[in-house]
Image 1 (cartoon, one colour):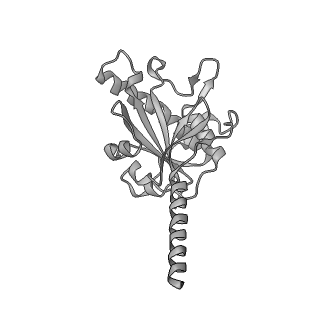
Image 2 (cartoon, helix red, strand yellow; image 1 turned 135 degrees about the horizontal axis):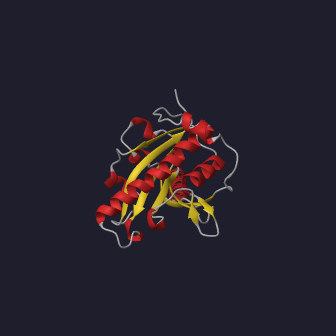
Image 3 (cartoon, one colour; image 1 turned 60 degrees about the horizontal axis):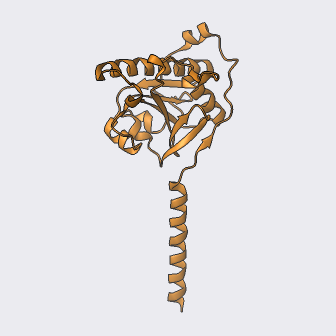
Length: 217
């Protein structure tokens, strides 16, 4: 009888553990707070403070800070036309911004102001090769969808995508300078491994990544 009770208990605990794992594996979309579109540090002061950092606190960023950051990076600043805070060649808006946190990977949907769940689990170590990447609270990954870049050669696609990501990255730098956050843009990424984890098709190319967080020691 005791053996039966132990077996039933073991099965129950296993089922509970399986259920918890399944729940953890299914990430939900995250509606973001409305971004702040005024205030902040004067532009010239932000330019003076702009710098790259490679030491980050592991403390998570509040959702309202993430919302403001993503809007500053590549949010919609002209709702009547859907145009963005950063320019893009021919208004292709070909760059997708992914946010990778300890909880999972998300795609920033600027139109809905939502982080759309892409992959569960902590994928931060795939977002770069430097040690701080795996412990910083947020890594942005900039992905160019070449299918949107109609009528251009592969060479032009690479040129335009690189330039457009540069505009977005600088917006992130200026926001971080204004808000007292640390950031660094990076090209050293295992693109194949990260693309596989994010389920990216061949026409979506990882251009750069950018780490953001509170300054570390």
